[in-house]
Image 1: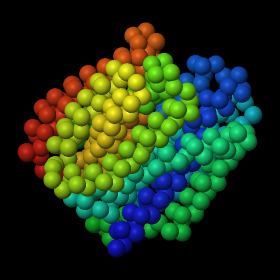
Image 2 (image 1 turned 120 degrees about the horizontal axis):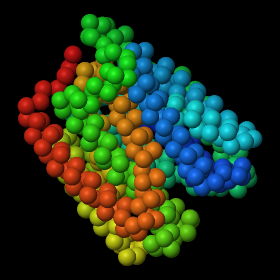
Image 3 (image 1 turned 90 degrees about the vertical axis):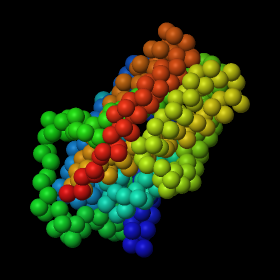
Image 4 (image 1 turned 135 degrees about the vertical axis):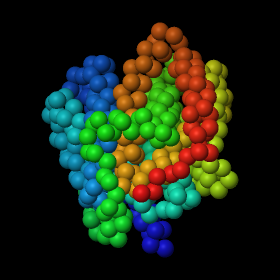
Length: 399
């Protein structure tokens, strides 16, 4: 029962966190344009958040391994709140960049939340438990942009202020309601465990470790394909299907519903019947088919159909890769490894918007989908060769 309370608490905290984030996300380009930002600078404003998260996510994860999940969550939420305040009072483009950089550095707390869930769930139930994070993501991105759009009609500072208020509520929730998952008993149990070095070199060396390294590679290449889909979808919808912003928002809300339903209804059932690696392989193939079909969708009805395997495959992969990694390392490393995974995902969000936009402009609207499908077909063979084949011989690290 205690674990169930903890899971509900962390779900609520992540949901509020993502709700605040998604309130302002669709409005940022328009906000930047009020300060005279060019399209290139608008793109950089998006990239600076991901670039800062590239640094912040592994540091927050590793710090949570050392000092506990709760204090690091509180620090990161406070940083988020300050970033939103700066966004609300911004008087220049430079302040917008500072606000997004600060939010990126402290916004990698999802990996800390995932580590928290790993602490309080049994390995056999971890995939289903981590699915709560994905469900919180989906629900936050369904509700947040709609509310943000309404609040934005009163001025761009209004949704930024609302996001800051939500962060303040979140801080109070963690402070008064969320117990520490790395309890005194767990800390004593891990006292004799050799802590991994807290250096960039040590984190990069993780990419070469057996089983864990290939899972991190899988995370990166899946993220490259999926973030390209996310980052250029609005342009794709406009150029190929002539959808306006409101119509595109409805389609993205549909994707959010599919993703949330996948996390809530599908993950647990798959975990009960298959290994994590088998699920990763199957979901990679399903998503490759979806992206290939997305490239050639002739109309909105066809688009809504092909988005199903993309949303389901992406939702399953997002959760199951993290679940597999959390089981493949010692408990004292879980925060760090999930933070490194989040950092790699942030790197793809720096690369994909520019690469996807270039492909869309030079090669046509089908090219990003074809590229993503090729990447995932290759990834499926990589998973089968480097991960699935070795799973039979792999002994999870427990101490």
